[in-house]
Image 1 (cartoon, rainbow, N blue to C red):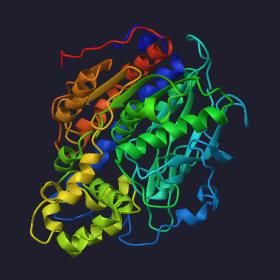
Image 2 (tube, helix red, strand yellow):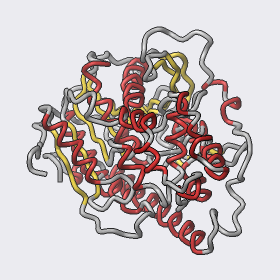
Image 3 (cartoon, rainbow, N blue to C red):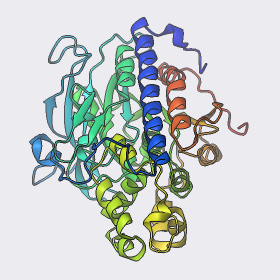
Image 4 (tube, rainbow, N blue to C red):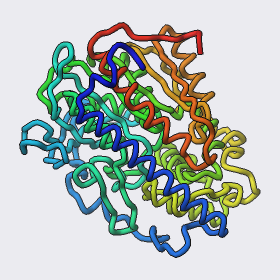
Length: 460
């Protein structure tokens, strides 16, 4: 148990939400793992007898909803709201402007190059009453891996649950919504970040931690503005996996990029902090498709990397990159799960070997490393990672936490002891997200209540 605030202090409704989220997400992971394992056993790249997702097809989402198309001229100020739209959700208890009501937001953010860009998200008003200290806080939630296509954005899911791109069959399952709802039931306002290029035009810059951190900080600014709250209202960052990287990046960049924000604390679960370590872990894995998301995102921001396709990839590798540009995580699992990246290169090297050998690609991936260019945490941070996480290696998360400690941060590093189960299935990655959800929420409630933050720096 983390801090003085116990999970048993949460409302009955919130506990039920967390319990159901655990059951639903675990069932989803096990089903996907069983499917791709069966497919691999038969030597297929997809589940036998299932034509979904189709191997080709133009994405339909970008042009289907004009809300996500930015105006020709963007506001100069990062974090400024461009437009809003009602976004029905399950906790909308009283209609527009009532408890639990939600709105999509399109707002300004900044790329790693300093260019202004539009990003999207959704703001959920608290459905419960905040019983803690001070005004109701705002929890800014960065999503775990959803995919690379626009339909995969959390805000594009109907009732914040589910969406389908009719052009290529990509499916968006907003598997973290129960946790958003739990925070809302505890009396917190919730801002869910889509991240740059996820929902809006342009390729999503997947696991580009500095850019994701800026988008998260600007979402906090835009969310507070849309809620009618002052810029110094209490905020916190929360995320797991890709979202953990975004949350940690926001935490380390807050004092320089958004110093006006009153950051109380951050939970960063299983952050992909060092991509040169992560790339090997997800090779021949259920979610090998995420390597396509990352490479496509890197080429979007670094056009000089485009030549890598012809230099290193064979026809199957080029198909992999083209297909994953607009996929969500579920359809990528079905289509590319357990793929050996050595089968997609001209010389038989793995993606990880190429990333380390090619100075251009290595330098880009190293620029995404957490606790490297920025280490100045202006609020406490909790990092959690499974000891046997088969997706995001425990060691690189521990080293990141240690670097934050060395820079003077107040850091609690938590190791989930789950034993290894079906390696390369993502179960050892997904289950700690669920088992740590309650302690992580308790940690954030303690930070909003200004309770002394735990730290085990030097003892992990």
